[in-house]
Image 1 (cartoon, rainbow, N blue to C red):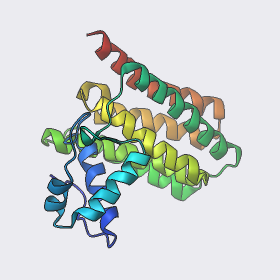
Image 2 (image 1 turned 30 degrees about the vertical axis):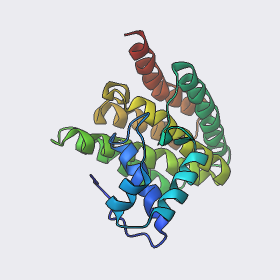
Image 3 (image 1 turned 90 degrees about the vertical axis):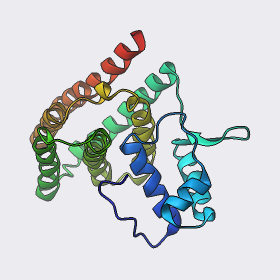
Image 4 (image 1 turned 30 degrees about the horizontal axis):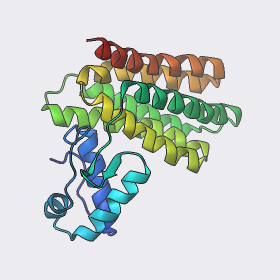
Length: 226
């Protein structure tokens, strides 16, 4: 199922990458799921070669794992590994925020885009949609928000690494929707981050960013105790 993309990219391996990422965003591909080249190529009406290339790229980003016995499958992580990825992502993204605030890099156009994304989160709160669509929209908007900051910092290498970390954590959190929060909760958290960035106050930005991630971490840890 696809909620936002018509797969029209000219590069077929990019098309396959986008397809798999969207299936992860929507929760249709979950941790441990086997990814069969022939199934994906049939879904997209393309040959298996670009699918194989896409799986290699996603393996490099840490979203897909290859095993000689199991083939390609969606990443699985222990609780300890998940907490480690949280630590790495938070540290790297704080460095992005440091760069943005230090250089006063965000312009009016950036804030309009960030405000637009949070407004869309608020607007979707009361809309009726089936679970996979809800997951896709919530996760996609969250990705667009954070990736806008990564790109605005000009740190392309950090942005690429953070994209992989984003999806790795998402794969784990998609196991239980409660860990992701609601549109309204995420909109409020992102709004507070934007307001802190508008003040160009690094300590305030850190505080709101930490609060944003605290909700995810506490939800994951609570699930572990159940």
